[in-house]
Image 1 (tube, rainbow, N blue to C red):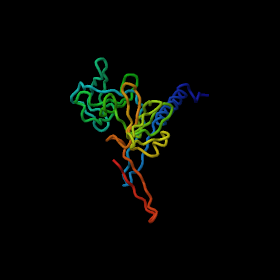
Image 2: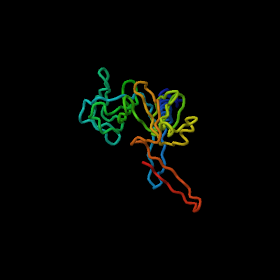
Image 3: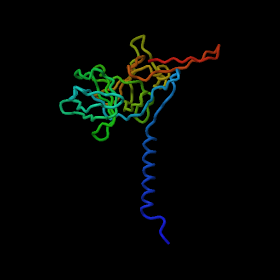
Image 4: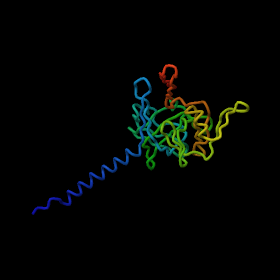
Length: 230
């Protein structure tokens, strides 16, 4: 009697099962949040990116470097300092949120790395001194902060809350209390020398932060209104 199930058959089945496992793992580790902005249009999509590198950019080797439709349209080498450079190849996924890349030290690179290779990046404006101002923090867990735009970075054990001075200073008993009052209306400060988030600034937002959508129900008519804050 002929053998129905050969070694090749089982190898093929094993390969299919392994591929299914890999794909399931990839999609399970990437969280995508989608919603409605109240006008029937899809709200912004947020993908998680584990950030391995945040550094000031002093120049780009390619003056024609551009990012369009979510990918780099040309390769470039970004000069980080006198001894370090970062290579971005064509078609690398990313966003350009800093129109001043041509100015020395005006932008910072935020990157998700695989070894020394860039798998995703964002160019953002530099903040005061050696800091980068980023969107608000959504959650804090196990030493890792997840921002409202999905970027994940390390944070200091104690975040400096800069919420006014003197008699106008706002105080909070905890970060949870701070978040309940501020919502997403604050800036997270990343310190390039400490390589982590070290502070939050109240009642400010970076220009590229996700929109804030709040719904308030009017008790007299039972209707609800939706307000989107840029």
